[in-house]
Amino acid sequence: MTPPSPTISRVRTSVFEPATAIDRTFPEFPAAQPIDENNYFKKHKPPPYLSEISKDVANFIASHNKQNRKVVLVTSGGTTVPLENNTVRFIDNFSAGTRGATSAEYFLENGYAVIFLHREFSLLPYSRHYSHTTNCFLDYMNEDENGQVVINAEYQNEMRVVLRKYQNARDKGLLLVVPFTTVHQYLFTLKLISQELSVIGPNGLFYLAAAVSDFFLPHSRMPEHKIQSQNDNDGKLRVSLEAVPKFLSRLVDSWAPLAMIISFKLETDSNILLSKARGALERYNHQLVIGNLLQTRKKEVVFVTPEEGEHWIRLTDEQHANGTEIESLIIPEIMSLHEKWCEKTSTL
Ligand code: 9Z3
Image 1: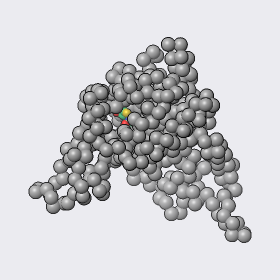
Image 2: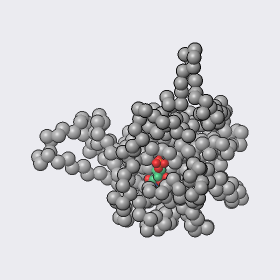
Image 3: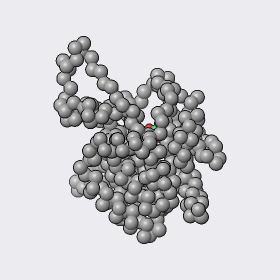
Image 4: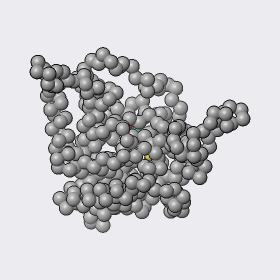
């Protein structure tokens, strides 16, 4: 139940008019080759904190591997594309990280350890239920007669459930949260975690739900300081972006070749969703593409696999009305596919 908030308007300015969405009908970029990987990772400096993350990730994976627990990397939220080195302006996208944060919870509840690679300050598993924008946590509280802050009676049960799940994940060390902001940080961190995760072979699962920018401004062409409005003769800002190499191919072929890999395909035109999802599967040769439309992503998704073709997962009207989350249907299906993948791969 969402409490009424006197201070935060229920108007959502980020929800656009679906009919105005632009269809991305242009052809896909080719899969990245080893040379593209070399070029990108040699031409760009790794984020300075990467070695610190590397240790945490390696320890996390080793400890769960010892307990024979499967580990999933969930990526979540949108990447930014900075336009200046001392960044004032950047290009961003709509993703709040709902899919990623929600999915991470269902993986945790079903016995997985989760590395949650997410856009810093986007939604997190568990705390997402009481986040800053939709359900302001302050609206769930009050003062009792002694001035103690307490949770309102009507939210006790719901909150206790979330709190217990959160504490279980935290106390058992099942969740490792790793942030990114820029597309560049995302790519370096993805490569690092993938290589660490390759150690556990098929027990590793990739669930790539982050909305990763297709374009970026290379460091070599990035101005150091804030772009000045009077710089351009005719008062216009012209930005020429380059295609972000499609590193999914490198992940499948080289970074973690035995892991099960799931990517998401996002479109706004229902006429091209399936062909784009199939195209991605053929191009990258991985195990599953989950297709979704921006407009209906919370109600339906389509699984596209090499063996079984397409298969839709949809919430019924009743499920939608009672607040069932589509991720509660997606994750069990993925777990059974992952189980089969582990069996198949171990007999190779
Ligand atoms: C997705 O398609 C996710 O499901 C959403 C989740 C980003 C739609 P929210 O954060 O949204 O819950 O609001 N993620 C992948 C999007 C993407 O950029 N995919 C690339 C593409 O479509 C391929 S990796 O080309």
